[in-house]
Image (cartoon, rainbow, N blue to C red; front, top):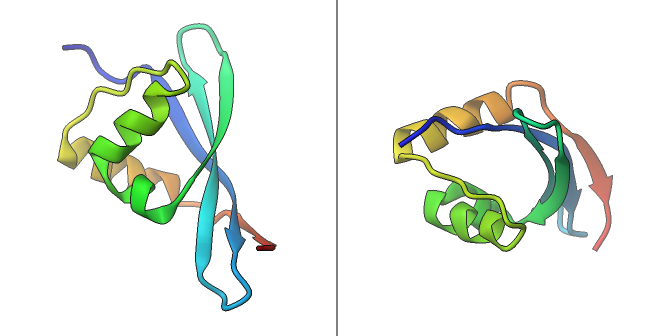
Length: 88
């Protein structure tokens, strides 16, 4: 099994009227060729390695990870807080 070839960045998040986060806007970059995909995921999907695998697979991105590596990715993802977008 090889290491992940992707760089994840959280660009923004969208809040509901009640202030809860409805989804995050992620930028996923293939380190090998520089191709970038932007996708929207709910907090529930983002928190689960399995749900993230399914969401990324729908974009033809193969995400191979362990729970620890996924948690490490989340820590890196939120090291620099994303910008909020107020919306529905």
